Amino acid sequence: MILERTISQLDTGPVAADTARQMGQLGYMQWIASLPGDADYRRAALDAFDRAAPFMVHSPAVAEFCELLLSSVERPLTPLPLSLPPRQRRGGAQARRAVRLPL
Image (cartoon, rainbow, N blue to C red; front, side, top):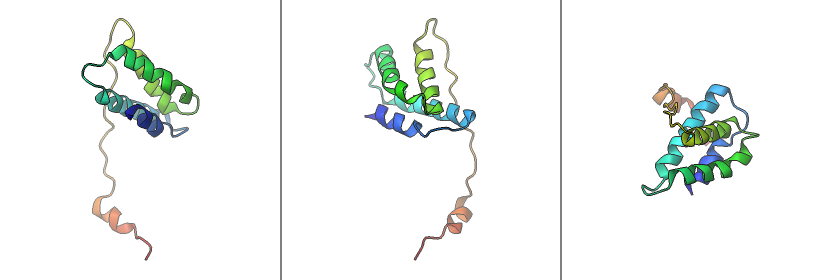
């Protein structure tokens, strides 16, 4: 299931606060995109929170994911602070050529 995959991807241990925020937001977007159109959102969000909560202690990214889940069901409803991470170059062809595979 996507929820288990999302939790395992987010459960990376200690990371910087900004990285945890970005990872939590991406995890939330991945999780919500996997919901069926006729899903009971509130129930699904609270279930996801219950299943992810045990991992919050050791993973700031999971804690951010859980915070988004809880914020999304609070009344009054307010927009969530979701954004994609900034685009960055990773080196392109030059970086790929620099990585030599052992023969």
